[in-house]
Structures are given as structure tokens and as C-alpha cells.
Image 1 (cartoon, rainbow, N blue to C red):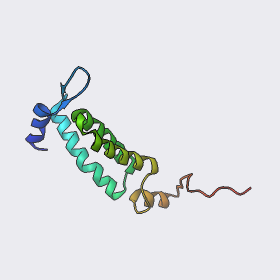
Image 2 (cartoon, rainbow, N blue to C red):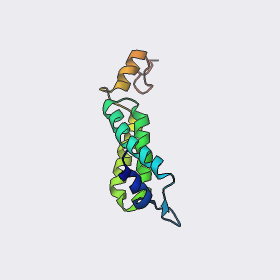
Image 3 (cartoon, one colour):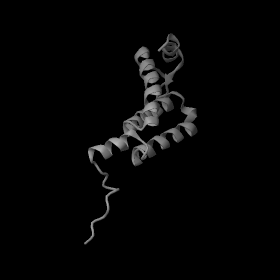
Image 4 (cartoon, helix red, strand yellow):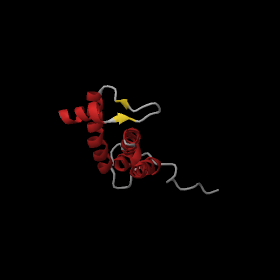
Length: 117
């Protein structure tokens, strides 16, 4: 990460909480975590590897962004909805997660055929 990101978390970005806005704690750490998450989580989603974990990370990041830019909620709610949908339904058939599941023999309960009685 570069110094610009740290400067943004130090001087520009604020947490808009009741009684605030407040400075971000540990701006260098926040800049590193934010930059890492913005790179790693989307790559994991594209590959379909750790899909639900990556979507959870993006929901968490969206919450932090919403606290930082509270007027951006129309866009942020769309991001959160997409990530929540991925968490609920999981990766598709063209994902590494799906291939690993098939190789290990695990089968989702939703995809099992109902028992005939």
C-alpha cells in the first residue's frame, strides 16, 4: 500500500457514528486491510474459491464504507445485496468450490434427491 491510502485514512476518511464523525483507529492498518480486501475478495469471487468467505468479507467492507460515506447507501445496498445473495446461494457450478466439493464427495442437502417412500 502507498502513503496516499494512509493519508486518506488519517485525514479524509471519518467514521460517521452517533456523536461523530470520528477518526479511523490505526489508519495504517485500516489502509492495509482495506486495500488487501479490495484486491483479494473480488479475485476469490471470480475464481469461486472461498466464495462465501469472500462475500462475507465484502459485506463487512460495505458496512465500513457505508459508515464512511453515509450518503452512498443506494450503491452500497446494491453491493450488500449481491454479496448476501452469494452467501445464501453459494458459488455456481463453474467454481473451484464446486469442483472441490465434487472431488471430496460432499453433496449439498438442497441438491440431494428426495427419498421415495
